[in-house]
Length: 393
Image 1: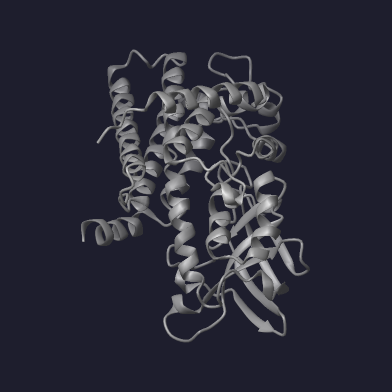
Image 2 (image 1 turned 180 degrees about the vertical axis):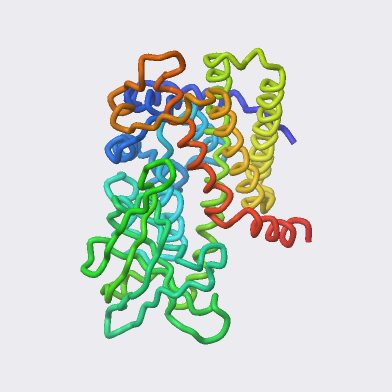
């Protein structure tokens, strides 16, 4: 197994690096490198820049308007964007629902929905989790009843990431109660501006409203917005979750944030503490191991072999690493990681006292926010069971 990049792949990486350096707005990359809050315009603005180049759907085949890159090229693109300080591509449209539409949607649905995703103009949200139906997603209760040529949707979704900005939502709904719970689920595309849709933000420990509750009260959804067949949504949902869990691992962001841990340790005077450096070294070993796992999968795909079914394993390790690097950053800054006055931070000021650096201010909030990573996308406890069954046998 050869994990080294070829000269052609290295040339491709240089091309991506130069393009990102030229087109990524500096004010946005500065925010990313210092973990400042990104606005909707920051996030969608970068998506539109990529969309104009034809790279927002960087994992798409050419037949659907993508660049047709192979697995190695996609990895290098993600790495260069992360290291340059680009915002994460919001995955709900181009990475999650688009592959489902391509694989299971009709030609008319391809023409209707894919262009808006590829351009970054349409903001998609995910309608999976419900109160009481997170990791046990098959127990969801949001119901859709077919009346004439429309589904009438009633119920609730929760933890909808950035749903306050959503234009459309891909939604798991119950269309039958017969048989196993998984057998009665369908996959609907729902316009979030429809009458009867209510979005209520949830304020988190870090003071942000990153997630939302979404309520459906007799929402009418045209039947032609059903993906695939009725009651086959569980199959489509699993297909999507494989993309989500691989995306959550985000090894390239981990590499960038590892360097940030080192900078913060030096800035805050703890770099000379050998015990603290030991923790950084342990983190670096795990980041490298995660990268090697990703490269093994990519090498297998490049060779035309069936890659290991390790989406769940990547999710477990990637999410744990995210929690560890945010914890080390917070510990490096100590009490100076606590201030979180958003208005002051947005103005670039957090106090004129030793340690009152704007780079330190969001660290405690980031730590609290990343407590979620081992829960969302399927809790790690459940993922370990899946890995044990599918990989270990």
